[in-house]
Length: 139
Image 1 (cartoon, one colour):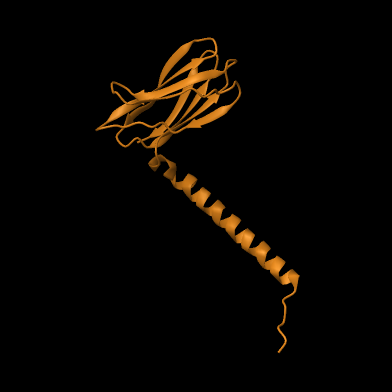
Image 2 (image 1 turned 90 degrees about the vertical axis):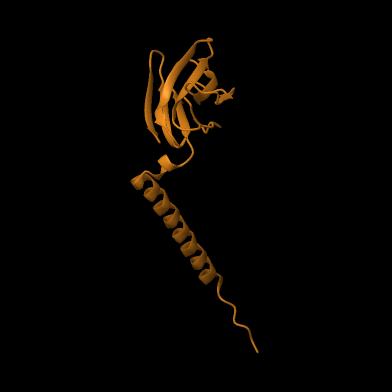
């Protein structure tokens, strides 16, 4: 009995079709997260965009009037972005601050989440030479 072999073209077409289905599925999930803003239910993250002329040499995040804090000594070069998922703990409710030091030694502190009970959501911090802007979406 002869075994029929499928031509390679059929296997190739099936592989391409499967790849397209997977890519469409991934995009549907990403769009669903952004449409329903499900990112606010994930662990708190801070995205820092350094638009200043100086490198950021350390970033500390912590609970205002609390003992929980997380310090990172990673550089964020001028013009770069960095996403930080601080390791914080909270009992009850509170607010989150971020304090950074630039390459000149100048330190600045900013509230990045004015109110949280669950340490979830995100904040986007943009650092300029003369100001810091914060867009918060935290819970």
